[in-house]
Image (cartoon, rainbow, N blue to C red; front, top):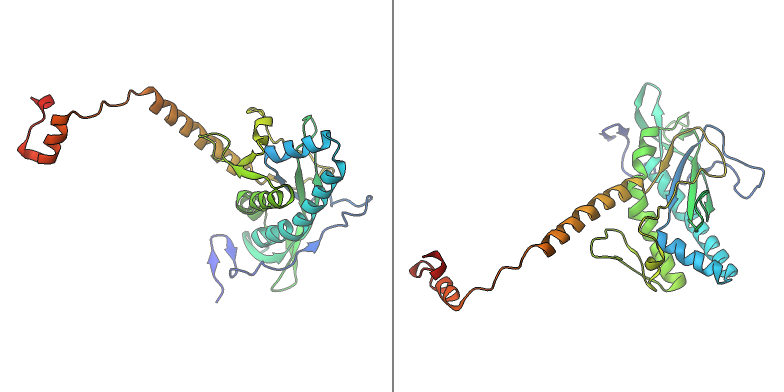
Length: 269
């Protein structure tokens, strides 16, 4: 039985199919269609700092090897998860309803963002403006609201987790919270988080091609929530530090507590 959940029709798992290629990223003359959509996935700043330090130390081959390994992760994992989370086409009879469809996808990896001197590793996932409905084979425009909402859960739940695990295997690093109020993990051993300025940003890259579809930064929502939570927690920690600690109970007060109502604390008289 087909279920309808909100604006999406279909069963769970209907979109779990292999995506189709949008264009050949290995061809230097190829490019995404001008009306393609784009999703940007970014790495934690401390990992970019580590790779930046490796490049400065002349470890270009190791940095290139990371780029190859990360590109493989993007091709094998990120594209599949974008298909699963966002693989819907707009029903022409009801444009606000998404139908399970096979997306056309392609991705490129970059190590820099224009205007930022330090490394900023990230990837661009390009999504074709139309998709093939799995049930009928018809081609309709992709269901844009699902792109805009579907990728937010992928950023922290999958992409960042996969990147952390990859860095652990490749470089032997340890991730953790860089400060008591932090809500996001960074590389703490070696302490590459210390090489990241607190005011530093991941940056938004315009990408190698100018596309006219929607552009979504996948980790934007999770970073916003984490920043709000850190501000709240930092204020709470500062409040606790500023409050005087209560004096320990006297011997008579402890005795009164043990006796309950049968005794009265001297401080209450």
